[in-house]
Image (cartoon, rainbow, N blue to C red; front, side):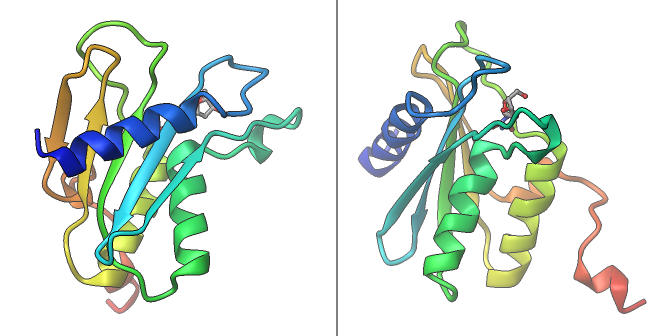
Length: 142
Ligand code: THU
């Protein structure tokens, strides 16, 4: 795996350790790299009112785009270090939709790296690969 990807997976793993997940105890970390090299990480932030919680992927993505509104996400890594085995956790449906929105917005593919505690990584070339038959802005124009 390229050193840059290893670094991103490591940053996602470190972010998971700082998650606020007192209800599920399921700590997820995400880290993304912008084309300019900036790395932004995030984790899941839960709430006693459960639906108010937010996943790691969207925490990282929204933090990145809030501060870099014309940023282009080259890659995002997602890791749940506490899950054992070589099959990674994959993003929930809402996060897939959010990643796809960014991919549409930036007009170039966003690589998705799904890491495990064992070090294996599943790589997808684009967020769209996670969401077949997706709904995007082009549907609103039909
Ligand atoms: N979670 C994420 O952060 N990302 C996902 O893609 C799946 C789920 C979080 C949400 C919640 O805080 C906890 O994991 C259990 O669902």
